[in-house]
Amino acid sequence: MDLDKRPASPAPGRYEPGDGCLTTAIRIPVRIVVLVLVVPVRMVWDLLAAGTRALHRSVFRPFGRGIAFVCSWVYETLLTPLGRALGVALWWLGRALFVWPWVALWRYVLVPVAYYGLLVPLVWLYTSVLTPIGHGIAFVCSWVYETLLTPTGHVLGVVLGWLGRALFVWPWVALWRYVLVPVVHYGLVVPLVWLYRQVLTPIGHGTLWSLTWLGRGIVLIAAGIWTALVWLVVTLLITPLGWFHRSVLAPVGREIAAALGVAWRIAGQISRAVGRGLKWLARVLIGQPVSWFYRSVCTPVGHVLRDRVWAPARKAAAEAGRAVGSALRSAGETVRQARRDAWRALAGAPRPAEPVAAPVDGARTLGSTTTVPGAVPAPEISLRKQV
Image (cartoon, rainbow, N blue to C red):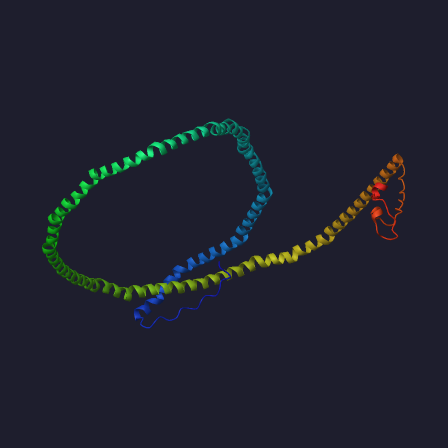
């Protein structure tokens, strides 16, 4: 149950003035009935909520953290190195299977074959055969065009131009200008314009006027019918439904909602009281005996075990560890000393270090080119090579 709930909100304010005596009379029984129905639901709800929170704190959250830790460890320890190794292997395998063979084929097969087998012969053919032939053909064609075709073409073009105009342009222009245009204008356009202005326009105006007044009448009739239908619907349906909603449904719904709210808050108080009672009962029947057993029995026994058993055993284990460590260090030092003695017996005593003489020259110059007064010229040889 919800044992740590917030205090319930205060009771709702009074209703607006105008509640009748019937509403006041049925309010208390309705609230009592709703309270009887809501109390078990509220107690079950509080019990489920408390159990869910406890289950979340005790089971789901630690279990989720454990799963997250295991998944993180598996990912970082196993999957990441395995994925990297697999990626590198697949990369090299892909290059070996799909890149290197095609690169070698292109570089050492296709390029030499195309260059020496196709490009070089074509360049030689173009340079040595086709270019001279093309130059000769161009020279012959230019000479024929400039010497023979140009004068003949000018004369033939003038003659064919006048002949084409005489046969294909002037007859059709005369036919269009002096035959078709007058016939179409005076035989078709003029009668159609007169018919449109004198006959069709008055008929259209009269038809439009008639349709306009007819449409206005139809609109007025439809508006009257719609107004009558709206008045009938409002009078016979909407007004009774509005009165029924305001007088019956709204008060009943408001009372039911208020009763549910009050019953839910009262049920919360009852559930809280029951939870506190169960908590006190559990503390008295289980918590206090367990606490007394822990203070009176477990604590003295634990102190006796700590002082009489665990402390001596830990002290003895520490002394034994120190003794074993000292023995191991002594054995190691003995072994090292024996190894040094054996090596000295086989190889002899170590040779003492000999002192190295310091160089005589106090200053190093650049040979005979120095200008430092009093400096002794020294050979340009490093100390390592001198030794």
